[in-house]
Length: 329
Image (cartoon, rainbow, N blue to C red; front, top):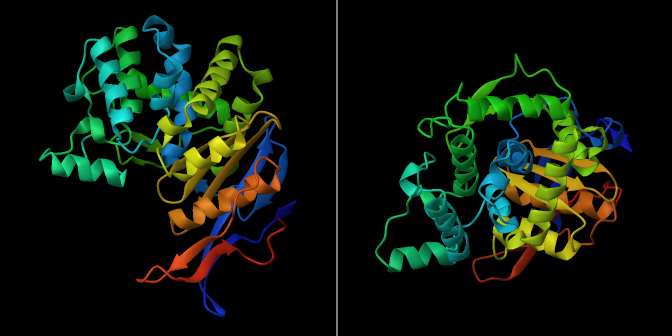
């Protein structure tokens, strides 16, 4: 189905809808054929971290992953927005050490672990969060790995014009079938360049990972390897209790989903040959997760609970977050 009406998530309290989140979503095949669409499929968005599975393609197709004998776990960390649990931090630390580098070589900056228990443990230990605790530190380790393998500077690897970033930009345009030369540009939260692209182009790039028949043999193999790594290690992609991890575990290898800041979501469904791109207008994470769950349910990929409770200060349920009543699922 295709609708010009926006995708709508409602927040109820008692007998009425208290708030609404609007957004857009498009589900396409590798040729760009639309299976489902809600809202403006041509709107230009910053994909943010939702396209990390695409970015990991470059780590593999340059030969860096094989040169450094990267495991599926490390490829999952390269594709992650992790919570900085010990499992995440130890894995990235060991990877950096193996390639002769350390956390000080990461240029992503540090922030508190997004996993609440990990943040409390760091505080109790009297330690400050470092660069390795950044939820993008796995991706940045992948960038360093690629630069080392290609004989390029590791300093300034996140800057516009560095070969690492140039390859990522070229790959996004190729996979999405879009000319991004005049695309809006900015700086992502972790410091790398971010480029605006049409929501449909983002979905098609993801669909080509799901159904790589039109890709070069090297890129098709890389796409399959990224999917295998992320579905084999969903806890490394996000973390305990996180929607991405829970949904991938529930789907038992049928889907990769990846969140991005400001209400972005990406989905890769090889069994159906489909890619999913979703954006919530106001950037609300609670709405993006509910909407992504509903789309996956509509596709028959999994059957999650697409409502979450609204609790008061005493922990009592006083409402729900749900898809609007006109949702086809």
